[in-house]
Image (cartoon, rainbow, N blue to C red; front, side, top):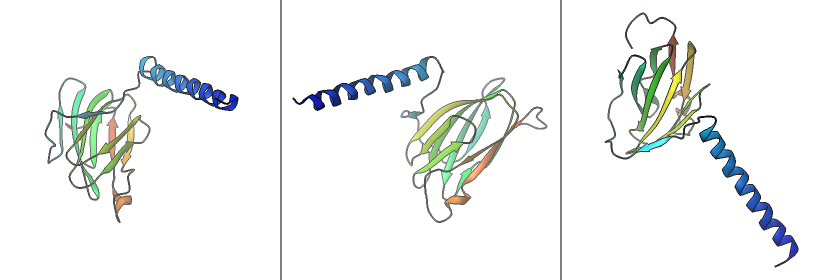
Length: 152
């Protein structure tokens, strides 16, 4: 083995250890969740939002050409949302601006992530996977209110 090949192997191994260490650090010390694919649940055909506890909700979000259902969600500050995303037609993306949420909406599959909204305001979400001619219209928002005027 040539000296330059040995150096390349050593550098590759060091980078592999560095990247793996970075992932482990993020998962353990920064408490960054990894999106999960749910395999023991049938894909849903309609959107649903319901309260599961005092400050916890479950949102089943449905992606279809060229819209998300629901396109607007209102929740109180401090809400923790169990987010389930699926698609009715083709592959879509789902990203919440300002949050560490980036999921794929795949037909026949459900992707899951938990997100907490500690600050009031509007959190926009959009499809980040090109899905056709009206892809640019596929967006919505989650409105976090400091005082809820009506139920979610």
